[in-house]
Image (cartoon, rainbow, N blue to C red; front, side):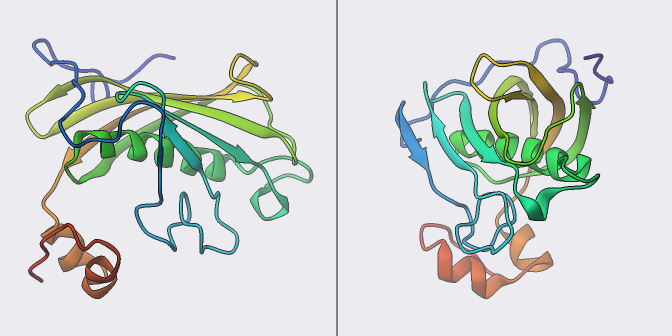
Length: 184
């Protein structure tokens, strides 16, 4: 995958370290919002990603392509695969214990993904600089060492929780994130 300069860490970028209070290695990462299309357990047609952090720095997840996720008959929709990449990368920035949003997502499709396939996702950070986090992810067909079907590189930007209150549903944030202070 050839990354753009936007998703390539600049000289001097640092690699993240496990933060105090972050999920421990082997911990399951719950949904950040119950109705999120990517990770929400209450979204009826969502991806329902079940993610863990094997080492406190990377995230792995699985996604099984269902009927609601197809584009061409019998195949996963490319936009759904991009959403899965965005979500697993977004879950990996949770480990930094600060809120981030996607600034740019570049996705390369290497193989078709048939309905019923379990895609094994992995995301990691390649560098941090100021409020910017540079990340990558891959999705493998059938197993953690199966063929790579999709790759992504992303730039995420750190924001304050007030961003979500201002542009989203402040009450939902309050209801589901009691550990964040939100002043809409």
